[in-house]
Image (tube, rainbow, N blue to C red; front, side, top):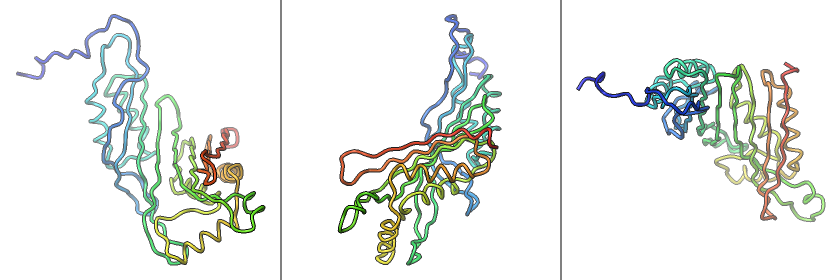
Length: 263
């Protein structure tokens, strides 16, 4: 049977006259290549969402075309290509608007502070773009270490400390390196953390965090100050969640700031 003889139901008219804001494919796991500041390119496996609008007179969209577009660009997904991807989605799917979202683990080689032993640290990244906006949003989640200033002040021995998580979102038109966002977070806590530590490294990290105690409020303020100085950022949100070691709840803080007028 010839392809032209197969009925194309989704292209047929729909008589309910209801447009759809977003329709497409969600949670596709796909191997992709992203830009890496140190290595040039990094292979990873991403979770991808791709949507377009659907006019009221069409019954359905062409789901297979989303995968075709993703496959064409998977060897070099970056903020530099986002505009092309969105344009192609609109063109291939006869849409007025397009939405592209990709989440992936990103790995950076970090050397332990004293021994120099190297291992890969994982960070969760998300890139979101819409065709009706002239910027993209980059989100990076960064694990760090925090030590409580109050606990240090009132205790004769030690202070409670815990793993904390920064979630940094930035909106920008030009390229913002993932590594720069990670550095902002890691230098705003009591200490950064590592995938591998020898005894001498553990001693160093323990003492470093003790000499640099921070509340969750300090952490987001420290990060916000650094983000305000970065070029190209139009807006940012920085959140910190401290997984309190002496409580059954977390401590949380957030700062959001629009920088459009400062660019």
